Length: 385
Ligand code: SAH
Image (cartoon, rainbow, N blue to C red; front, side, top):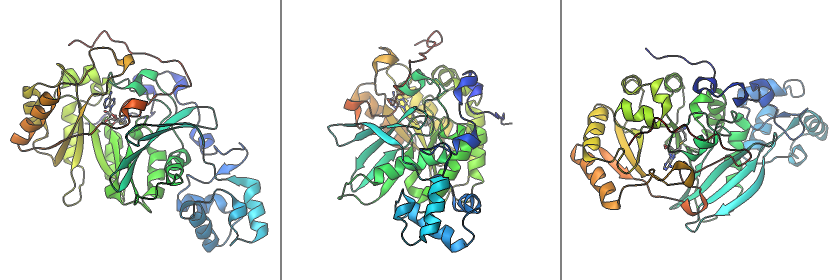
């Protein structure tokens, strides 16, 4: 049986301040708080919201196209609409892209953007050159309540759920950045936060983003929030699924990721075995390698046994060290990483090693932080290795 958790952030003990905007308020995050923001509205929600001023379905289509295909953020520029309608729209609605507060470029071409949201919260989005394409690492929450012991975002503590508009805005902002040599985007929900604890807004954002990016190019990564995975399984259009696994047994996984006590491995594997996959589709398992903690060849054997009956691929990630994580959180040597991969392959698994990107500007996996506030820190007493 899967335990159900109703409220996103409360479960991991982050108190009442963790989700500071109610959903109905959060939808209206435009520049002027009296204006309703349209950027995060799916086609059907847009039609509903515009009803007081737009009564013809083709006008709704025009406005949706202007926002999402033409990339307009001002009604005045929608010159195919009558002037009176443009005025009415401007008086009631907004299309807001958050302000880019800072930008850091790494030597490998990765760019980390820090956005300042309407309420002053900050989030990070990473633009990673990826051959002929670009991969955008998208945040789903401003902070994260889950306190995974290897993750800098978790060290900084919980924030709030992003609105669907704030999620879509990150992608639109990247699309506006000129990079002529590239063709299209891959999206990974691997930035700040846990996407499946912000399920409704993530689902709406995906419904919008999936209109022009193939599901094969979008990956949602989760620590394994089982009700969220079950909900995703029922969506008519789904992105690919990645699971942050990081340990082959409950004892170590619970030390590293407190959420494992709520959703232990056997339940996770059980739910994943029922997750509907397209032909050739696999579930990705992210496995951070930490020296002397989870990098033994016997751990590779356990991992292969655990995942053996699933359509799985394992993505090994030598941990990105960070001063806040403590000195034990270091990657194994390169030969040890390769040996771990080879052992998985000998056991019949598909296994790759993730290339490290943007690490010189703290834009790498698990290094995104919310610098608008003081860190919560970790309780370290239970981490023994
Ligand atoms: N909460 C979701 C989405 C965030 S993804 C999830 O955990 O899946 C963040 C990715 O970066 C995850 O794969 C996470 O495991 C990885 N990560 C976190 N800290 C890291 C670190 N210090 N080094 C390398 N990868 C890390």
